[in-house]
Structures are given as structure tokens and as C-alpha cells.
Image (tube, rainbow, N blue to C red; front, side, top):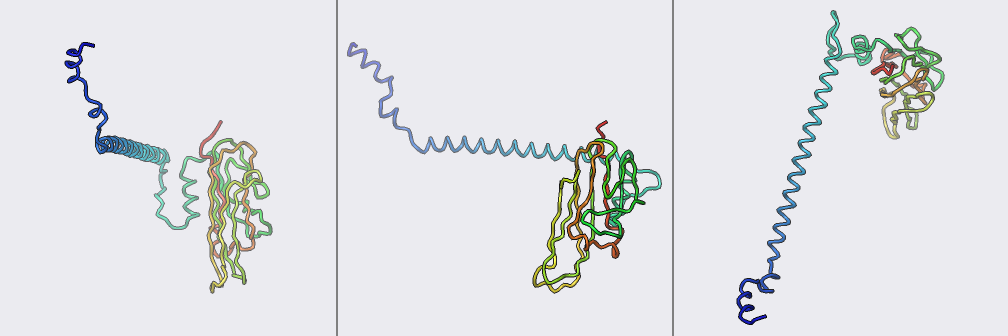
Length: 234
């Protein structure tokens, strides 16, 4: 190339040293600002999603609450007996197609509990300790039991199981009368609930390993077994 032309072009081209000399701090600061910007954007997006999810849940709860009528002569629950509250909810709610409310039998002699046949049963069949489903759909299942344990010299495991067609679907376990405890008598409440989709002729039952500790005398009305059809499939 002509020396004069090369000399004229040289001032326009950056020198090798200038091209390679980039302060390390400027690169780090640029990457850091980019990372912080991405973090802030992600945080704001997650917060927005959380607010939206909470708002959606609140709307669904309000809609579900508004769908439950308040019949004349019925008053809002004011607490008190838990089992009576369950019964009141069932009586005032839109669960008339299929529901049951039973109290435990005073004569318990096996792990599978039996229930008083004079309980409230509608759209469900009771047979040998089982509630038998007559309509398919999503069922809400509730069981509450009271135990009275006269502590022996060892600990006692109390277990409540909900069974669907003889298969354990949910259970609660608590240990009482631990070694070194000075208490002679222990009152213990166990409860469990389950939301399950059930077909016609599905059986629902309750099993308790230490059935001899179920207290049918002190609080007989507090030992209850209840189900209701939450959403029908037919």
C-alpha cells in the first residue's frame, strides 16, 4: 500500500493497546447492574403473581360462602361444641343430596368402630360400621374422637385411620403417657378429614388400634363420623 495512504488511515484505526485496554471494573459494574436489574424484575413479577393468587383465592372463598344459604330461623355459629357446629353446618348447607352424621356406639369391641344407627343419614347407606356411597362425586369426610387414657407404666400410641374400601387413606398418630409423666389420666382429642372422589358402593370406615381408650362416657356427643357430597359427578 502507498506509504502516504497508510499514514492517512492509521489515525482512524484504534491502536491494539487501546482496543485491548478495557477497565475490569467497568465490565463488572455492567454485569452487576444487569444482574440486579434481572433480580428486581423477577422479584416484582413473583410478588405480582402472589398478589393475584391471593386475590383469586379470596374471590373463590367469598363465592363459595355466598352460595350457602342462611335459612330462616337459623343463626350464625358462635363457637361452642365442635360436633354441634359440624351438624349445624351440614343442616344449613347445600349438601342435602347425600350426607350422614353419626355418633360412636357405646359398645366398642374391635378396632373397626361401629356407630349408632339412629344418626342422621340421607342418600347414604350404613352397614356394619361402613358408610356406603350411593351417589358418585367428591365427598368431604370428617371424624373426631375423644380418648381417655389411664396411663400405664409405658407410653401409649393412639392412632385414628380413615379407610376407603379397606385401604387407609389418611391417619393421625399421637403418643401419650410418655415415660416420666406424672399424669394419671389423659384426655386426648384426635380428628381427621379427607376430600376424596368416590364411586357408587364405595365404603368408608374408621379404625382405631387402641379402641379401649375411646371415651364414650365423658363426652359421648364428641365422637362423630360425618360425610357429605361436596360436588356431584352425575
